[in-house]
Amino acid sequence: MTWIVWKYLITAAIVVAVSEVAKRSDRLGALIAALPLVTLLAMAWLHFEDAPAEKIANHARYTFWYVIPTLPMFLAFPALMARFGFWGAMAASAVITALCFVAVMLIARRHGIQLA
Image 1 (cartoon, rainbow, N blue to C red):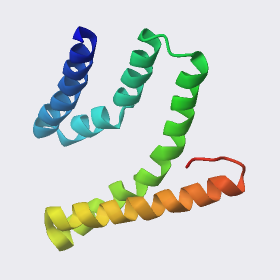
Image 2: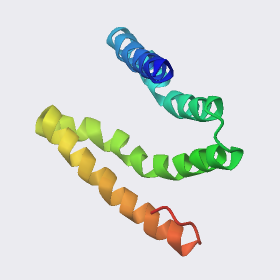
Image 3: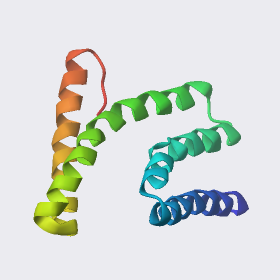
Image 4: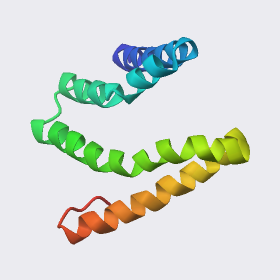
């Protein structure tokens, strides 16, 4: 039980740190947020919990494929926010991301990569 509490605290601390840095510096906050910190932590947690190497490797591989459809949202969000406000931009970004996920899954399937 103690281990899971530490996992929550460390992971939450990173998210809070990113938001606090972003308040002071847009660029530095974005740089830290763009780092694959959560993925690295997840792989570290898997390793510390004696997950098989194949499971950790698969986690990294699938994360790569799942990051791709999220990228257009980062370009669309600023323009959407200027037009629809924060919540409208969040909703539209979620729809864009979902559509991109479907597109990436279909393209990946054509190349023999099963994502869902």
